Length: 109
Image 1 (cartoon, rainbow, N blue to C red):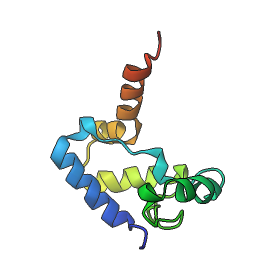
Image 2 (tube, rainbow, N blue to C red; image 1 turned 30 degrees about the vertical axis):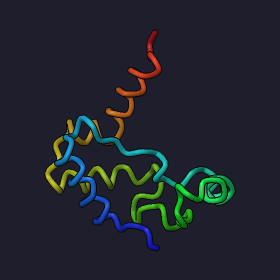
Image 3 (cartoon, helix red, strand yellow; image 1 turned 90 degrees about the vertical axis):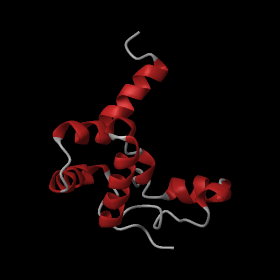
Image 4 (cartoon, rainbow, N blue to C red; image 1 turned 90 degrees about the horizontal axis):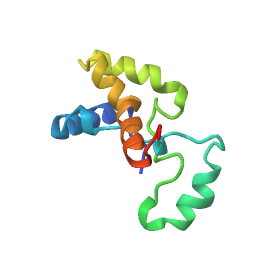
């Protein structure tokens, strides 16, 4: 099993956005390497949740070119090149997640 390339991931993103629309797509933080550089994945996710991880490792569950929070600007630039507008990029890269969090957790109350 290999990790997805950035191009493969962007194709998947296009598929999902076309399927459900940009108001319902968000980038989950579980695709990023955590501050422990994968120690958490190896110690917890891969060991305790084998049925979920299905043989993936910290190295294979990440996306080449989109492994850390600092990669968000280049991902957003790639989205611009593929025709996403600023509003859709904002929603997908954090706005939708913040909106749903506020709805679920009652932020600001």
